[in-house]
Length: 157
Image (tube, one colour):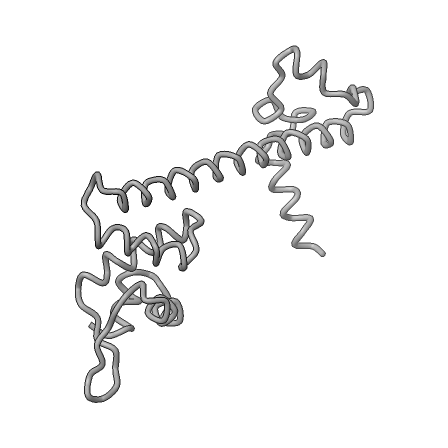
C-alpha cells in the first residue's frame, strides 16, 4: 500500500509517517516510480507507535523498545528492560497526574475565594471536613459551567 492509503488506515499524517520511517520505526520499499510501498503489517506497527507516542514516549525511546521487542523472548533481559521502561513511564505519568490534581484543587480554591468573599483563604478547614470542590461546585455553579464560561471568555478575546 502507498503512503496515502497507510495514512488513511491509521489516521496518521503523511509527514508523520515519513518521520517514523526516517527514525527507522517503520520500513517501506521503493517502487520503480519512487513511491513508497508499505506492507500490511505496517498498519499495526504505526498504530503501536502512535499509542506509545500518546503515552509520552519519544520516537528515540520507541526505536529502542522495538529493538527489545524484536530481538528478545518474553522473560529475557531485553524484555525485562522494555517492561522497566514502561513502568518508569507509568510512574512519571502518575507523578504528573498528582501534580495536575493538586494544581486543579488550588485553582478551585482560588475560584471559591474569588466568588465568595466569606470563604476561608486557607484550605486546612476544607481539607479536614472532606469538601470536594470538584463535585460540589462553587456558589451553585457546576464545574461544567465554570469551564464553559472560561472557554467563552477566552473566545471573546
